[in-house]
Figure 1: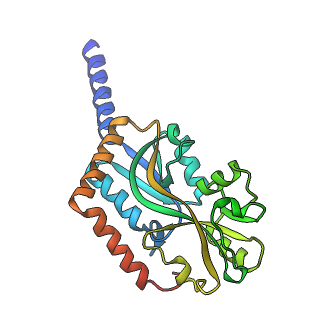
Figure 2: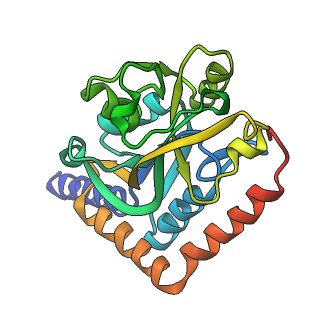
Figure 3: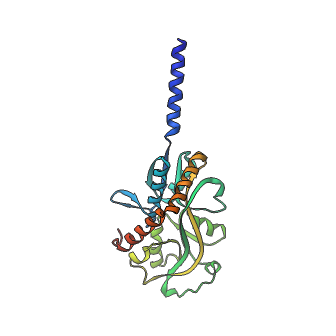
Length: 249
C-alpha cells in the first residue's frame, strides 16, 4: 500500500513538472494593420509575426485571438496566462503587466477634414472640439484624463466615417510605421493630419500571473531578433505587403 501511495505521488509530481515545462499563453490582439489583422482566417501582421517568432524561440505554446481592443486588454488584465499586443506602455499601466518589447513605435496624430483648415501647435488647440477615440485605448485614456471632450468608438475605423459625416471634429489616431490605412481607404484627399502630439512605444503586455522567467525568455528572444535582423525583415515584408494590398482587404 505504501509503495502504491509513493507511486501515485511520484506520478503526480511528474505530471506537475510536465505542465510547468509546457506553459501555454493566451494572447489577444486587435485589428490594426499592418501590425495585426485577419487574412485568410489567420491572424497576421508585423507585430503578430514578431510575437510568433518570440514564442517559437522561447519554446512557449500559445494561441492568438483577434478581438475588439477593450476585450483583448481586459483578457490580459484578468487572465493569469494572458498577454495582449500592441499595448502602449504608459506610467498608469506600468505596474499592471510584465512588458516585453518594444515591438514597434507609433505616433499619436490628430486628423481632421482638410476643409476645416485647422492649424494646431499643441494638443490644447483641440480643447472644446469633439475628438473621436478608440474605446478603452491609451489615447482615449490620455485625453479623458486631461479633460478633453471625447467620443469613443468600438472600432477605430468608424472614426474617419464620423469625421466625414461631421459627427466629430478630429480623430485621435495611432499611425504605425508602414501604415497606409488612410491612403488605402481613399480618405487622404479629405482627411489630413493636423498635429502629432505624442510618439509611443508598443509592447506585448502580459498578466502578472505569467512567470517572470517566461517574460525574461521572451524578452531575450526579442532582443536576439533585433540583433540578427529578424525584426527588420518582418517590418520590410509588411511594408511591401501594405503597399500592394487591395483597398478594404
